[in-house]
Structures are given as structure tokens and as C-alpha cells.
Image 1 (cartoon, rainbow, N blue to C red):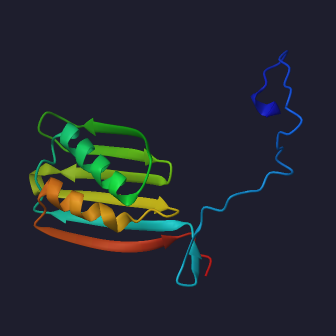
Image 2: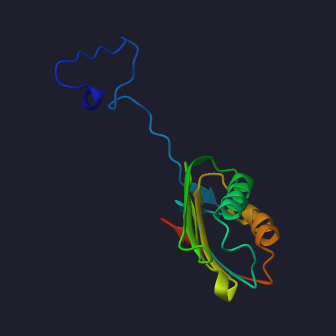
Amino acid sequence: MEALVQLGMVSELPSDAQTDENRETKDYFVHRNGVRYAGTHLIIDLWGATNLDDPDHIDAVLREGALATGATILHGHFHHFSPNGGVSGVLVLAESHVSIHTWPERDYAALDIFVCGECDPYKALPALKKGFQAERVQLAEHKRGLIG
């Protein structure tokens, strides 16, 4: 709390306020099937995909997918490289992120979804397949922060 107080300001904590020393820390790591890890990171390649040069469409599809995972969207930013070029963008999630880079001239998009806690990145796949009408989806999974 003192780090938030500017010079000359007074910080008074209520007598029942918790300090860093006595606050219980919540662990957001996942524990499934006897394995403990930070979260699941999906690497997704969409081939034969459509609507890859429309930042508004891409934003809407990724938001639908992120919400389907159970994530909380904090912020999104998408950049269109030229009137007919690709789009790069990210949704920052409370539980991590979703990102995309598109090559409309090749009908290809590279995405990644990294979520922690109770979120399930696989639940985003139907929204991605429908929204981009992908003919083929390549998928790889990586457990981040694997403890064992």
C-alpha cells in the first residue's frame, strides 16, 4: 500500500486491513490428473481460412472464443497492415492472452491461446472454426510452468 502513496500523502490502513505479511496468497496454478502447471497454451494454425483482413471481424471472433474458454477480457488491440493486408492483434485476458497474425493472401492465420486457472482453451475452437471457416486446423498444446 505504501508504494501507492505519493510523497506528502498519508496512508492509513483500517485496523482490520491485511498486510502483505499476513495475507493468504491464492495459487492460480492448475492441478489436473496429478499434474500441476501454470496454464494451457494452444498453438493453432488455420488453413483455408476466410475474413483474415477484417480487424473488426477478427476482434469479434476472438472475443467469442475467449469468452467460451471462461476467460475475462481486459483489453484488445488489432492492427491492419494495409487496406488488403493481414492483421496482428491480441486480447489481453485476466487469465493470460489470445493472439493472432493473419496472411489473407495465403488464407492462413497463426493463433495462440494461453489461459490459466479453470479456463479451457479448447472451448474456443468452435468459435474459431465457425468465424474463420477454416478448412484445416493444426493444433499443438503446451503445458506452461509444469511442476509435475
